[in-house]
Image (cartoon, rainbow, N blue to C red; front, side, top):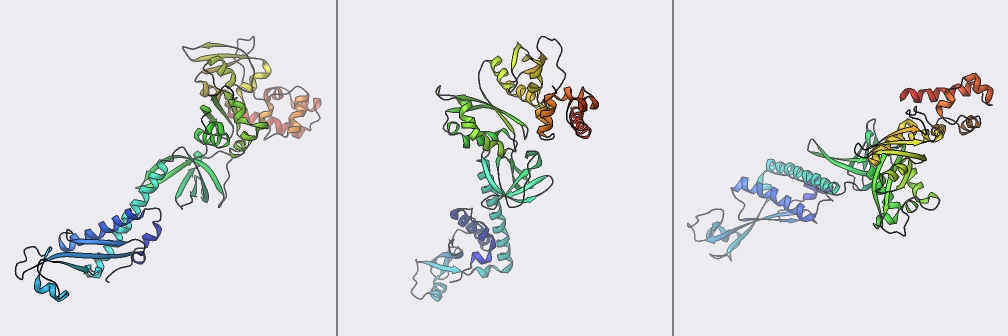
Length: 415
């Protein structure tokens, strides 16, 4: 049998496990029918038989046996005296089935077929990859870190497909090592130089939404709906949830007993603070909830301009604004209103201030407690006192006080 082992001749077959066999066979058939058309002018009287399991290929030529000298179409007909040379029992009117030796096409044609086949399989693999991940946009995937670069991280999924996690889609505190498995959400599928590029994200609100869906069965079952998520990746997130069952507390269900459900998500997001609030169509109540953890005294709403003037006690202002203004920024995004913060009973806009607790990652907790003991619970209350005054009032050393002042001053300079 004149056959060729495609598994050996065309190495691309080995890398094409994710392409279904019928599609693969069709591609091989098309490639060799193209060869037949180039050599004979037509492929009408040829059958290409592919054995995908063994990698074997046969080409059978069909011709009708006619009387000698009566051949009108050499591709479809063969003279009787030629047919009996192949098999003496043949008679006029029968069909002659003859196997074509693939090597008759010539070495150059075989190499061309190999290149065409490799190209077709490569296109198929690209299409399969694009289709697979286009259908998974917004879903969480787990992949292994293969290479860490300055601007992006290259990951491999379970099938060895390459995925990209750009720096812009990473949480600022993210640190990856080769070989570790990480989770991210499929953001989009781009085409670059005719090659699909799968972009992942860990900063997208969809990532937090899917993590909540995994941890909170009530969200997965549709009993609780996530109305909106806003994030400052690595810093803080606010999630507005709503329950379709009056017996279920949506906030309690998301947080879990003693925070059991939310803690896993916080760890995944590198200690991002997550405020879960109960969604309401009452905009005044929604603004109040969105400014958590601050407690509002009262507010004035302008629904036409979508503006809110919020009044708070002096010790709540810094909580409402948050470090780098993150808390109030997220509250504005969540509610769709511009929010201005005022001290209660005062008409002036509160000077930007930050609660000392917001600096717990840069200032030792015992230092913060010592400053609070003397009434300095915000950044400006510390900076309003001189180093000598703080040294006299507290048990802190001058060097420690100067370090604290430097951290606080740098924060206000950034603002």
